[in-house]
Length: 431
Image (cartoon, helix red, strand yellow):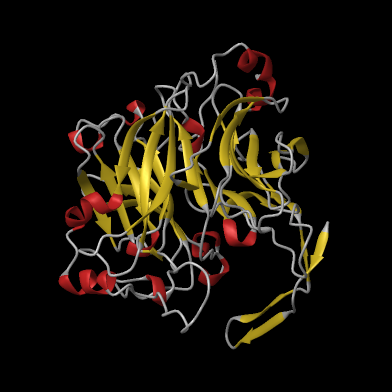
């Protein structure tokens, strides 16, 4: 499959020879080399369907939304053989970015809905994960007027834990912990004055624009298998990502206090999670470091860089245990860059699966950086002059996962995954 790019770029560099980017680029699988981790890659595409792709680039399964007049957005595999998916109205924007979810569903591999959650008080967005206790973690937000923080109405992010009956059993509201971020005075002033929120024209109709001040774009419970003795990283605590603040934070589930923070080590990051047991890097934090936050949404005024990287961070001493950027694959640094969305997942063989979301590119690299598998999403939206192949995130599951539908049908709705929802964080073999 092919698509026509907007143009060609030919650059001649004295002393370095010349390289060119063609006017036609390949879609589907582009690289397959020895050493790739077996399994299927699962993702929700901008065409409103979810897919399972084999290592040879073939579509093994395709799932449309089981609900009428809707489409699937971010979709992730569960360890019980089912799928957890965001559902959006069919007529909503064409992108795969989960800026909004009408509801979140769990469906089996035959497309039957076995669980659903919708919220009239909160705006569901970006991330969700099935927890080891069978509950579901959801990222959300509320509109709040908090004049001590900002003179503008805040879109303030929250994190909720919902049980199988749809009852909220735990909630965390960001603004309640504003002082725990230890913002410098100049950052507090930026937030108070609603940085980046341009004034509305005089006489403009419609509701006032809300101020999305922190932008939580990812969250994940720490798995028991992460194996930390440090109480800050005990199982059940949550690591969260605040894109606009260049901040990762760990929230203690019992005290609801922020007990760990990483500030400006990453820029506009996505998908932080603790690597579980059974894969190399257990107990470290894996995160996609995008490298860019718009100046209008960055109260810290940190300079962006025109390239992305994936970091494995030791949370105890903040050291970088492993890093991937394009130069690790003998390519120009700027050839790996997604300014938003994206994620990464450690594999049992030590490889790392990377979703370069803005470009719809999924690839797998060895620890030294060799690309052993690459796939470019061909399932773009059907409308618009420029095809949109963006992918929020992707995850690889074992080959046996697609054969587990019969086992999943016998499981309890919202039941605990046998190892927790490890496929958001790492790849495990099934018994």
